[in-house]
Image (cartoon, rainbow, N blue to C red; front, side):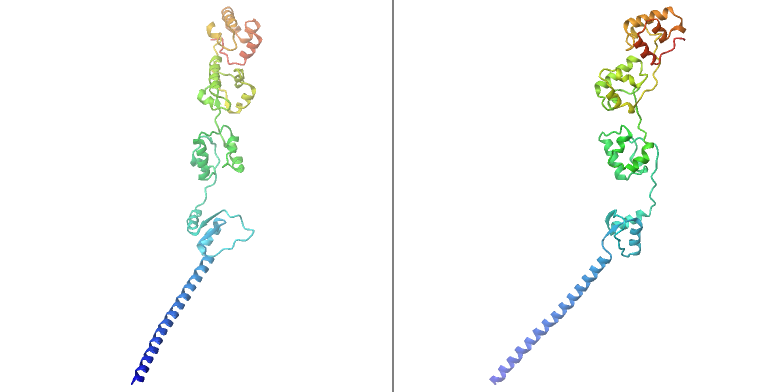
Length: 304
């Protein structure tokens, strides 16, 4: 009886051990299948990424469209064009739609780089970023005084400048009309020289030629050469030499006080036809120097 009980216990122990082992085996089989599934899925994902990467190299618009529309991998040869830009597949899809729009042809028309709008800069062939860079330079106080200044801008390529140079139209400063604020914008002209230019212009009755600027004290040839290409001299009103009173005549830079007195006497005793700068010189009323300078000025006719 005792032997039978021991035998029953042993049988129960073996049965329990077999059950645990079977369960463990089932879990191992399931785990192996799961591992195989995960490995296969990972392998398929790697293959997909290899054949259709998330990052593509856009060499040109045609290639980008071919990649996106046909969903085929394209091999870039060693002698292919230089890569222009790098962008994700999602960004490339947007760019592809944008590339289907025919790009606007660069236009050429007369423009002032100091005032031309950002929109018109893009019409001239600049990108939006380049156009805004030029505009930011102007907003910070930058100014293009001559075409060469525009050429030195870092966003203006040599080829672009060569095309646009004949169309650059930067208005020059009229020394007979500009106020002090406009004159200060000229290179080498500060507030002092601007004030002297305006005063000398009033004394002359208007500049007759731009070289008269060098008659201003300390306004030398070097200073003049630095701005002569940036200025113009519009035609002044005729100087009323034959009608101004003696006191006003003496204020002219080319007429001394004694000469002003002599002019008044000369015009009283000579007919209008003889009232000329050359007549004043011959009569000894004007010095050779002053007569020569007055001859280059616009003088009102003595004949009414």
